[in-house]
Amino acid sequence: MAWMLVLPVRRWIISPQVLADRLGLTPSDEVLELGCGPGYFSAEIARRVPAGHVHLADIQPEMLEKARARLTRAGCTNATFTVTDAAGLPYADASMDVAFLVTVLGEISDPAAALRELHRVLRPGGTLSITEAAGDPGLRDPAALDALLGPAGFERTATAGGRRAATSTYRRSQADHGEA
Image (cartoon, rainbow, N blue to C red; front, side, top):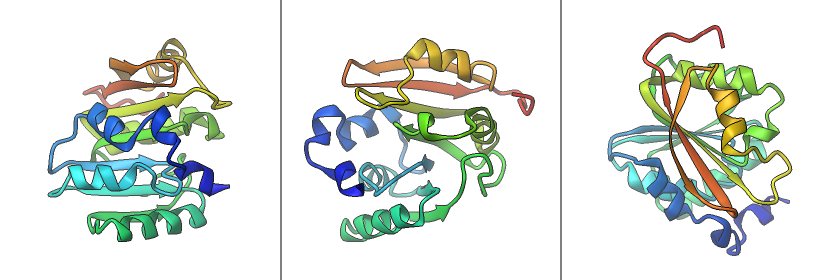
């Protein structure tokens, strides 16, 4: 069913360009896309960080192969692909500037563990972006996200979008927050 994740109609919900605009990327950012699926957003993100790198992570190897093929077709060479569970990310502490998830948080079996890991791999002051889309069975509104992310060491800095797709942007606290 991966083909459904790359249908052109998905642009009506949220396009890769709109999502990339919401991330506030700089050309040298290290970006983690957790739950990248077939790479629908990945090529646009890679283009926005030409001196940086995009780390695509997914629990399904088949999805990562689809993402790899998509980025190869787009000519993007600044990406790596990692099979991993969100509760045990294989990245160094404070190694990412931005991490983002699109309709993924509700699919993660242990969201608290995933948020601890995201906090660990983001640099102090780093950005975590969570986009929730209409029709997603795991949909959380911004207040529910705040309740989950606050104790994990994140503070919401912005919300963009509307009923079709809302992006909540958080900043990682400066403090070590391993107890979340």
